[in-house]
Image 1 (spheres, rainbow, N blue to C red):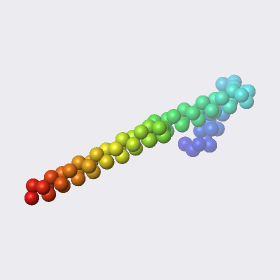
Image 2: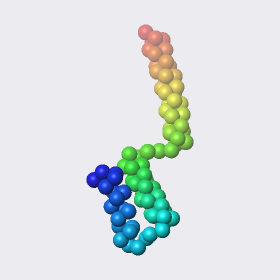
Image 3: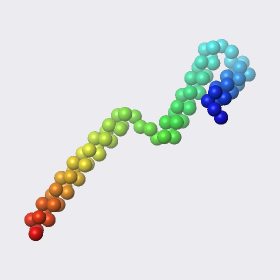
Image 4: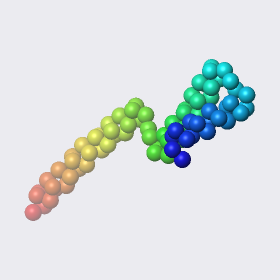
Length: 81
């Protein structure tokens, strides 16, 4: 079902139910769009920018630790030889 069909269906159901004021229609459409937005956010498992930045910093820190450990391992192999 296309977006235009959904909007028309919502509008027709609102009119059928006796919601005739523009304020009520606007509120109902807004609520429907918010619900659709939240559904998409959950479907795609999106995170906030703050959560992303925190995770990014953790990954960068881990990369540094891995590099340091790999350098130590290389120096130990050289010393043993």
